Length: 338
Ligand code: NAD
Ligand code: WQD
Image (cartoon, rainbow, N blue to C red; front, top):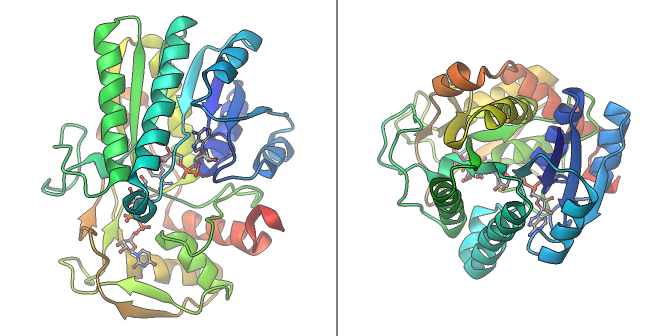
């Protein structure tokens, strides 16, 4: 199938391009490079042997989308494009709502005009309400988001749900990712955040390589086995394969489907630090710091619905996540700028 991949030069998008190609599909990427480097797509070619057609531009540019739909017989879209930094979304909320919601609406408008009514949307575990019990199921309560980024995902889901309700020809799959980490095993593609990383795994690997002095562990008085926050880390290659699995579902079902992409296992911050040190034979100096505002003690998925209906489950373990994060980091200390 020919798949329009918005945000395909980014972290999860580039890994998904590899898995799409491995499964015999053809990705067509649109990305404005706001948070990515086009070298990621050259590396996708190095890994797969197949060049990716790339349009540099904004998903909110309706004329550009029309041009892409004219040039290719697109079968479906995977919509990754969006801004994703929680802290930044509190500082520039309007930009987040503008970018994340208008891109979704423009894309759907052009898709509907062209009769291409199949879309997979990058949602997030952040749409779940804090008051839920663990593990989180797709039926768990959503809303009460703690930041504008989370609301853009919540609202994005609602827009797509309403589109599918109004027009029975649409197939919409909402994928709620937990904590994506790791990199392709080749070490050629991975995540390179701009500036100081917000997320745990890039902070650990940048500390291990000496770019950061030490990791601050945000809180050791949570109600968890060692007092540090517990999350459901998922290898990005498993996550990418979840999209390929969701495409089969997309093409055989109408209406809306929502699925968790997680492993179902939670690890604490200190579990991840120790696993990283053991997997890679490196030291990760850390200090205990105050809790980060807005953090939960524990968050992990029930991935049973994805296993049962998408026939997908994660196959990479914690050791694989740590090994592949380090492989990418150590081969590319400055990301794609090297
Ligand atoms: P990323 O920043 O690496 O990728 C997003 C890509 O979208 C970037 O290449 C960026 O340049 C592009 N982009 C942003 N706005 C655009 C626009 N208007 N037009 C064209 N391109 C645009 O992030 P990622 O980690 O790969 O995340 C992909 C998607 O998954 C995002 O929607 C994100 O919110 C969602 N998500 C990510 C995580 C995570 O922890 N990484 C967790 C849950 C959900
Ligand atoms: C994980 C754990 C921190 C950094 C975020 C978004 C979420 C989703 C994924 C997009 C927590 C601790 C972290 C550090 C630390 N993204 N930590 N020191 O907060 O679970 O989820 O990314 O949708 O929406 O909120 O991920 O990697 O930031 O934190 O101790 O320097 O690591 O407190 O317990 P989080 P994270």
